[in-house]
Image (tube, rainbow, N blue to C red; front, side):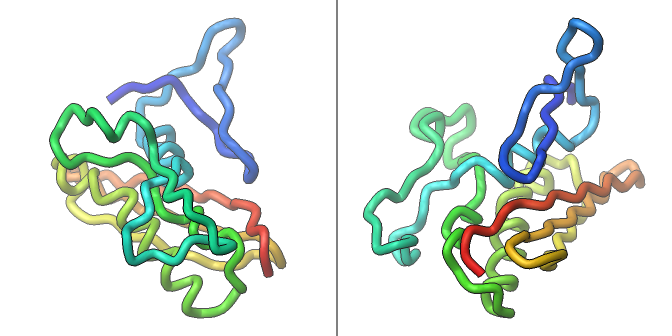
Length: 148
């Protein structure tokens, strides 16, 4: 699996350059960035931030290559939530949901997501993707958390 490399800086993703060319990612960092930080459509039972009505979602989900596939995570729902244990539990759940495709597609044998608050106003997600060939990819992403 090779993708154009993306790097997460805490506020957004950007392309990575290799000299004058786009760098390639031969691992799972770029898919992890897309999975975690693209907006998955909110479920009917989800409470939307600020009492809004926009359930968001990635436009490409309307025509998935594989029926039922959806890109992204529901982490955006936590943007205004307080830094409490329940919110961290949900962040872990949403992170796990977002990378479940690695299990479904046979890339990973097991995945682990841990979350923490490294400093006020920031959420840290650590992924361990245990591949079927025995290798483990570890990725860490810090993201700005609007409410605290």
